[in-house]
Amino acid sequence: MSDRIRTRFAPSPTGSMHVGNAHTALFNWLYARKYGGDVVLRIEDTDELRSTREALDVIYGGLSWLGIDWDEGPDRGGPYGPYVQSERLDIYQKHVDELLAAGKAYRCYCTPDEVEQRREIMRARGLPPRYDGKCESLTEHQCEQMVTEGRTPCIRLRMKRTGNTVIHDRIQGEVVYGNDLCGDPVIMKVSGFPTYHFAVVVDDAEMGITDVIRGDGHLPNTQIHLQLQEALGLPHPRYAHLPMILGEDRTKLSKRHGAVSIMEYQELGYLPEAMVNILALLGWSPGDEREVLSREEILEAFSLEGCSKAASVFDIKKAEWLNGEYMKQLAPEDLARRVHPRLVEAGLMEAEPTPERWEWLAGVVDLMKERAKLLSTYVQWAAYFFTDEYDYEDRAREKWLSKEETPATLEALADAFEALGAWDAVSIEGTVRELAETLGVGAGKVIHPCRAAVTGTTVGPSLFHLLELIPREDVVARLRRTAELSRAGQLAPRDAE
RNA sequence: GGUCCCAUCGUCUAGGGGUCAGGACACCGCUCUUUCAAGGCGGCGGCACGGGUUCGAAUCCCGUUGGGACCGCCA
Image (cartoon, rainbow, N blue to C red; front, top):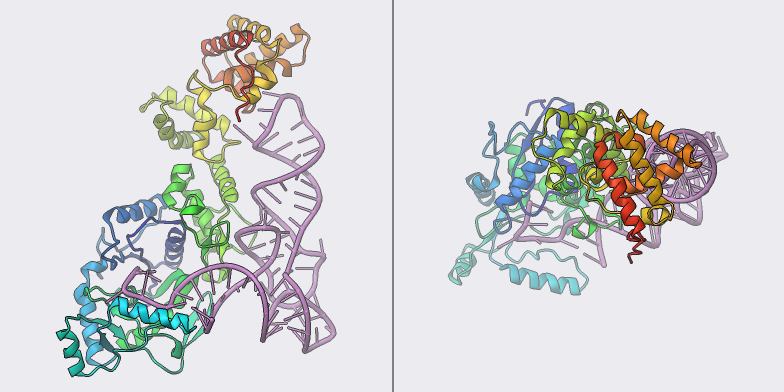
């Protein structure tokens, strides 16, 4: 084994790529990149029944969205391929034969049903529900008998019965498991496919993986892996078991926790660079008080020693805040480019804007970015920049649009705007304040109804700056239309339940 | 049921024998006055519990409690 660090991300293409998987992938990537090593992507599709092509695409999509790349993998090859376990069956078979010949593994003829039944009985008696070793010392003759009965065997590893298995974990420390309480695990299924335990150990060794970084759900499995490595005469990689990520109720992340697939966060409007930061801060800390860290800063500060042992809860509020921080840092043009697809999808903007429209959009998102937390916020809160068909919110109706003096104010403002020479924030502000003075009221008495009329809401960025970005004739039309509706009594609060 | 892991504000965490137990998100209040969903300022809030060891424990040890993972021909 060379000194070069080699880590791997080994997802199984079943179901979606959730936050926990992404977290593990990121930490493997960080570790390898930090120390100038290689990242291997290996597909663990030894579950013949549940592996799907779609799930595989989701994995590629998730990793590339996050900017996690790999040096070797199914798509790009490498010296240790193939990188898909279902294509490595002959390799596993070779190792199984070795184990069988050495008596370190044996054929088990029990059916899954039979094993499960006996496990059930053990559970009922309060015993650990492990394999009872029924087939561990079958004679040649008995084996033939079983075959005659029509049984096909799976292969089990003969685990040690005495002593302890000690795991030296870079994060969890030294963990000891007694050898007397682990049943013999299946390493090769009847189907001829290896089980996870076997494939993982064989491939990590064959692929020269130096550091296994995975979720701590695998800690107990490591007992099997270590013994398997010894039986096979393979080296032990270094192990680091990362703490899990839990839902708000402190249980394992699952569908009922809302967004579980990493791509759902993309849809929600998270920036990938923010997501990386969010993920990095779960179970790890730079050791100082920084919260917003670029990928480079994370790489710089990263270490396994900085990882905590305790499981963490994904805090969606903090995630949103962090995403907002990232959006504020983006150049307006960049932010516009990222928001654009969503606007197109919502039917609010053309697919191929002119340079002028891009510039205009940059202005819009720049105005909104102080309070936006997600890319999707722009679609939700800024519709009035793109269309006249925005909704008049109840709060706006109640506070301003249903007020008796409002129609007159709006019309006076429309007149004043029409008479205005220029159309920029400064002139607009001047006009508004002038009108307020003429009417003998505070500026707010004009500003608020105007905002309510032109945007349909009571909150938003600087009124003068947002008006500047909407064509004057549209603003005037909106003011007149709203005045009319208001006068007709159609803008009373709806009091939706 | 057995085994293993974990335990600092609601959440993410810093802190690893002597700290006013620090920060961030959230929350609350005040403020700005052109609104808040933004900004500024401030506040509330924590070492799970019980025993040790020690001059001194959030920190080390033991136990209790709570949570989690594993005990699959799933990974």
